[in-house]
Image (cartoon, rainbow, N blue to C red; front, side):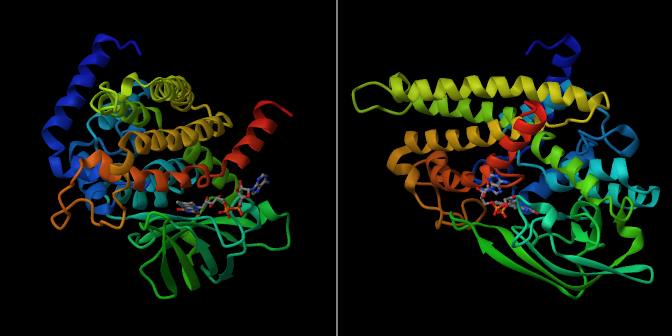
Length: 400
Ligand SMILES: Cc1cc2nc3c(=O)[nH]c(=O)nc-3n(C[C@H](O)[C@H](O)[C@H](O)COP(=O)(O)OP(=O)(O)OC[C@H]3O[C@@H](n4cnc5c(N)ncnc54)[C@H](O)[C@@H]3O)c2cc1C
């Protein structure tokens, strides 16, 4: 990507800031995180540092407390953060809920919630999926019934990422069972610090606790915490899901991870006196992944440009989600292949970082490879599975 002199100066400013403020504990924590989201102890710490600098809202307009950066600056920021191994930021609030409130929120909701998202005072989870409603989200059964100026919510949510850390949940619930399925859904902001909410852990295949089942029993939500109109939840959810699929840039992290892999492969003996980077099968697979990540980068830049010009990201986000998810899995496969037996050092050696963590025996990259591989299986499921993305592409892009 060609950068102007001003953009290069901005890149250097970001690089210098990361150099000064991203300490080894945060970098190491980020490198050794096998789950999609960083644990709050490092994610929120990094958020606090960026917020102090005024950079946490790097993808928000200035009027809402964001930086107002255009697409190129946002991308440079993402890229520098990826190269520096910065922790993943709490994206559910920053990239999913924030834009929803900008577009659909009342002035009171914006004034109350947006500053608390930026400061990290509120930690959010996403209550969309339910035991029988994932791909077919419109079938959701969680019920909201009006009671004076409040709504009473009963039901259950499943696979709720970081609900065990969250104090707030944005949630879809059925407010009218007698109309077309999509038209009976509304969007609520729930304060989880109240009776009637039970969070039950679910351990991933790698042994990590990232997701949960959440049970809602007589939960009270004031009318003022419904976003949009009653029955507008499906429209809002579609806008949010487009952001979930394509609003974040995957290519910076993927390209940075591939660069690390290339370097590690050059240092890994192939058993024949050379290094793994000269192994044709490995280096072909690596080059193919790099090529696809570069293609993804161009598509993501185009989407950022659309968003910054007020054009909706649209169904091309499904293309991004599909390609990025497959690439995440492929890269994790290459890492396991590279690290071989060392990569099978097991996820049950928790915690991987922090004061109580054992010293890595065979190097960090090997230590995390198998946990990354196992957790990466989820990429082709959450945010809409690959099959669902293909259907969207077939219908809305290819008009089949
Ligand atoms: C790690 C992880 C974190 C998650 N975090 C959250 C969260 O924070 N909040 C939240 O609300 N949800 C979350 N989810 C849920 C996620 O969005 C759902 O798992 C996903 O939408 C799939 O739904 P499902 O699990 O019910 O599977 P199902 O919908 O039952 O699908 C099962 C299989 O059938 C296929 N399938 C289903 N319908 C079709 C179709 N029409 N055509 C072709 N194939 C089809 C699917 O592709 C899949 O392979 C998370 C999931 C995971 C794995």
